[in-house]
Every structure is written in structure tokens, then in C-alpha cells.
Amino acid sequence: MMVHFAVGREYRPEGDGLYLFGNIAPDFTDARAIKDVIHLRDRPDRLTALSELRDAIDIENGFELGWLLHLFADLRWDSELIPKFRDAYRGEGHWFPAYRDEISKLNNWMYQHVGWAREICGRAGAADVSESRELSRVLPLPLELGWYRNRVLSRPLTRRDAPQVFSGDMAQEFAAETARRFKEWL
Image (cartoon, rainbow, N blue to C red; front, top):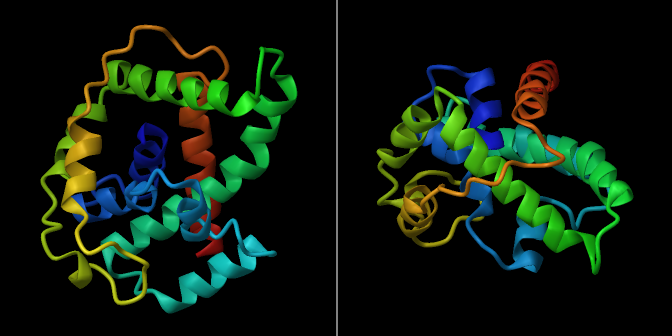
């Protein structure tokens, strides 16, 4: 979540709450199969699928733009950073639970140590998402998104164990470079 907010802030520092919420909304489900479809991971050429979505949405709609930026960031993260984590993993068991734990640590660390984090979360939390179907004519939205926003943004981010692989500096560098690439691609 916090990396998505960092990318969103880099791209549009004064983005409103709907734009910011759009930057985390594609993760509204924990069901991996549904999340993979939403994130276009089921498509053989994910960048082409993302380009098709870019052409279908209204980039003047902040929520849709935030959603698109989320998918663009995840495409980059999935192709560049997840393989590095997976290949370096030497723990017991499958690498994915350890990866998810590392992401949790990073989210908590960023929330606690990055100056803009609370303000950005507040702006996203104040967005009116009461009429989910009115947010987009194109995106695969559930009937109601407020429950997701409230669940994610009210979750306490109080873990004190620091991330071991994904540092705050790395996250900020990723955000800046992703925003730069998104501007070129858009």
C-alpha cells in the first residue's frame, strides 16, 4: 500500500483522495485468482493489456488514473523486484509468505518514518467512494469499495521490525523511477 502511495505521490503530488485511493484500490481482494485477473497477470502480454486499459479509461478521472498507475507499478515490481527477492530467498518453506511478510514490514516502516504517509492516508481515507459504480465505467469494481478503504486505512501499522530486503530508500527510488516511466508511457 505505502509503495503505491509513494508512486502516486511522485506522479501527482497534489492528487485528490479519489486519485490516491485509486492507487490502492486494485488490491481490494485477497483472493489471489481474482487479484491476478484484476492485475492483468492472466494475460499473455501484460503490457499490451495495460495499454488497452489505458486506451479505454478516462485519464482525467483521478480514480481511473490511480488504478492504472497501480497496475503499471505492479507490472514493474513483479518483473524486477519479486524475482530478486525470490532468487535470493534462502529461508525454509516457500518464498511467497516470506515475501508478503517483508512487504508488511515495509508498509509499516514507511507509515512510521516517511513524513507524508499519514497525510496521504488521510486524503485517501476521506475520498467519497460511497457510489463505487460511479467511479468508473470500465474497471472491474465490486458493488461497494468503502469497506476495503476503511479496512486497509484503519489497520494499525505498528510493527517495529524493519524490512530486511526492501528498504525505504529503495521504495522511494522505485517510486520516482516508476512515476518517470509512467509519464513517458502514458
